[in-house]
Image (tube, rainbow, N blue to C red; front, side, top):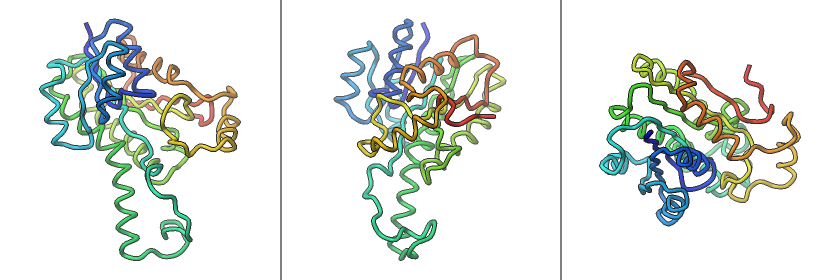
Length: 253
């Protein structure tokens, strides 16, 4: 039986990935910060819930006794654009790309905002992978969720996802001698997630769909299918790659 750990496994893409592994007979552990959400998801798909904020080194260390002693697959899905949780700028800007030059307080707020996205998307993946690295089985798999924003831009969120791509290159080289692969799955617009947190207007959604060649948003199932393929024995010679799931909205050439 394969042992799979999925961060951010309570909703959206993470839940779809965890459910796909569980339905194939894998032993699945899902991590997340919201206990009620996590336990409800785990009960539905037959997974083991572990409440953990994977951006917090102490929390990750504390979760280790509750994670499998041997891990075949790590899926780093936790993250999202933390900018959607923050008040939107209504003045002349922060000075990062023009507008009114920021004060010292404004620079501190800008730095904190960027660090939140880097913590949520990059540091979370780095910490969980490092903690589980000694437990990774030979021919194991590490799959990390990136984003089309790493190529098309989205300020601190896009920068954090671009950093995941760079980190994965090193990770693939380090783990390769053990037969372990490391790849990035990079979605575009995906329906059925909490990503936009109410900030996606109908007009913007239409523009994003119009940018695809397929004429539709992606689904969580589209992403989960690719993640599980990369975790399969058949994908053993694919590593250090960024694989895009965006319907042609960005062409990874």
